[in-house]
Amino acid sequence: MNQLDQLKALTTVVADTGNFLQLAQFAPRDATTNPSLILKAVQSPDYAPLLKGTVAAHKGKALDQIVDEVLVRFGLEILKVVPGRVSTEVDARLSFDKAATVARAKRIMALYEAAGIGRERVLIKIASTWEGIQAAAELEREGIRCNLTLLFAFCQAVACGAAGVQLISPFVGRIYDWYKKSAGAAWNEAEQAGANDPGVKSVAQIYAYYKKHGIKTEVMGASFRNVGQIQALAGCDLLTISPDLLAQLQASDAPLTRALDAEAARKADIAAVSYDEAGFRFALNQDAMATEKLAEGIRAFAVDSAKLDQMIASS
Image (tube, rainbow, N blue to C red):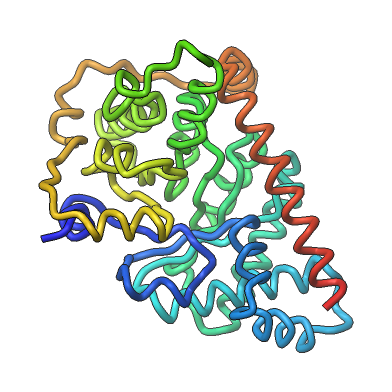
């Protein structure tokens, strides 16, 4: 049995791509997208007709509405391939505007519902800012399930659990990137691999906290740089993995063992914590890595959202 199949026995495997033509070979249950992945996909000749057709069908609408139509069109194609859920992201430029995030999320969900897709098959991706988490809490109360992304700090995970969000996506690779860059010449790759990888440790801490305190929010490790990070999180609720790394797992027959264990976490001595807005902002501020990576992630997604706007406007 290859490692991908072994992983599927322990963890729900999700494909991290906008390239739905590539999905079937890995048979993931769910798929996630983001502005950067959609931008990459629409630049491919394979998807040019889909982009042009969607834009033409909605000519005359406001640009932001056409963008959502394109995002949902990709989501609909993905849902033809995966049996589970697709994650579609709210514009990162709304990350600090709760009301606008709620409105955009509702519009995206309405487009899916108009296409005959039930709410249980869609997760709305929102950045894990304070405003984003509060928007998600409101949406969840109305039956719209959310995937809180760009999550780097423990306080973000705690706030998401308290808000009752469906799922969080802690970013393993980007945490690893920050610590590696910060250490410079002192970085020792072998010593910081596997369970010692700072991104892996972050997800393991969050997973243990949630299981200990009966928090139902699903933990989905994301943003992987190598298969070692994935192997070190086997047993996590879900892992969203790029096609390249899915292929590497599929090509290996080496044995894979469970790394995260819910039963062990429930027996661990882990104190409960909570954050009001001021406490959350201070805790995030005290984590230099999380503060920098959250800001950087929002900026990068905003740039790609603007590029997608330009492509659509000129189509």
